[in-house]
Image (cartoon, rainbow, N blue to C red; front, side, top):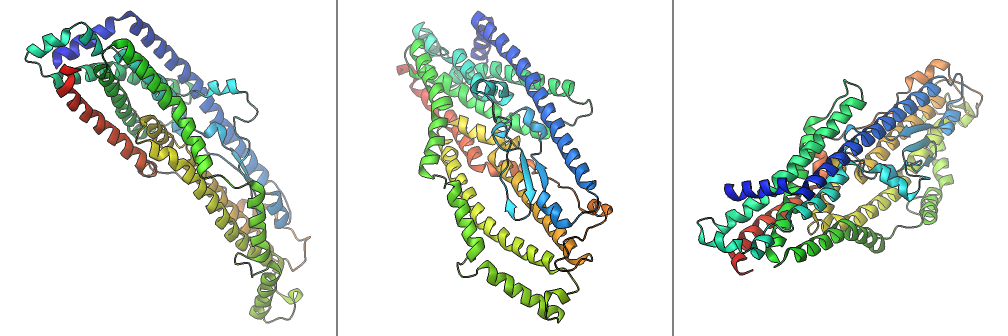
Length: 472
């Protein structure tokens, strides 16, 4: 196998068109590295500046009624992960700003891709895209003639009469080509890391452990692609046929199938119209989740409970401001309603995404794409985490403001009452949760299983093909 490995590697390195393609790939790695890192740095600076601006405005409100601040609201900004310079995933197309206010759960808005032309999407190319889509095309050009050329040149007859086992011969071809591919991939990764340290601050932390796991998954993916590319060259009689078959498979797996699975998800599990969602949630707030608990009746029961608790006959006699507690009670019920309806929507989106998830058992590109986005926190689950963190903070914020109105000295219907300027510093700023690498991988357990299954299938195919290669 060593002889086959060395000869195949030397032949590939000496091939002119492969040399040219390798140089082009390296130049693209450099271009994308600085483009991605500069874009990442700009997004990170915008995020930090926006957070600082909003927080400063919050702290400098001065004397004001807390309920006015609840309606003015606050803002949550989509956090930027250090891994996103490698794979920005769906981030350019998801809302990056969320307004947090009383009585409403808003949608995230102002995605980076809004208002851009189709051509501007090429500015969002990432190193992950290069490894997922472009490098497999290079692998096809590298491997399409690996074994079919030996058939056409009658070299297999010479191998058959020698002591070299055909399985060692096939593995030698696979591993030799894979070594060249990995040299380019590792070079590309080093270029990305160098650009990251060059463009960002010198003391910027690089999550090496996460990057190592992320790149290991890509190494498995590239081995699968290389193995099957060499196998196809063994399964067909001529190199031209092998090239046509593999390029057709590349188009199907990388371009056609992702589009089909996305469309299939939307057709099989269609999303309800926004109008229907608002109508259903509005009805539940007005009439109650069970349909027999109207808002007016809920408010009356709550008022009666307050009067009974404090032993008074009217809201005006309460030692607190009932308005704050009534608004918080309504807020708590609205949260139940929103949780019910948003859970239905998110479950439906998860079912839509499950189409591509299970399709990854026949398409390694789909599995790796989902895993990569998850590790880099640029997938749909990461967007949900952002929305969950923002909603958790919204509930904390509104409750604190309502309780301030209720308990900090105002009376019922006293809407002119104001807190002192130093009150706003007691309201903590929003914080975002960080998911461990273990949690990220657990979210893509199906895709990881599919990737490992595909690797085992490729290895099995090598063994079976080696036994039949003499008759191909």
